[in-house]
Image (cartoon, rainbow, N blue to C red):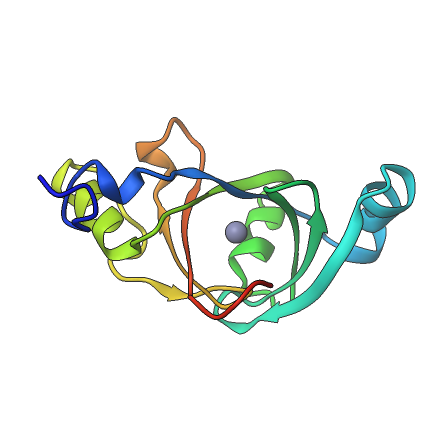
Length: 151
Ligand code: ZN
């Protein structure tokens, strides 16, 4: 099997690494008092992500980023998460080189997907979520970075 074949079940996760860890917060301003002001993490950027109805703060924490998520609408998945009395770790995101191949592999192997096809993510990415029921209760995001220079 060709090592670069995107259909190769091994190659689609060959460079699997943590892209970011996402934390649900009611207020970015409040959360940044810890992450930025006390812990000292640099804020790389703020971004509104309409597809998820969230405002995001990306923090520089090495090769893997930390993402703080504030809901911008009561319909946001983050608003619903917070309304359940939950907060803190929301999801772990893994970077994959070919998100369609990764979704195909997961589907073929019986994983429960929230998104059958990728949706637009933040920072010029395409993303898809895997149901926490397939990952020991942890919501998993797959992230493919579109080729458009470094960000
Ligand atoms: Zn994320």
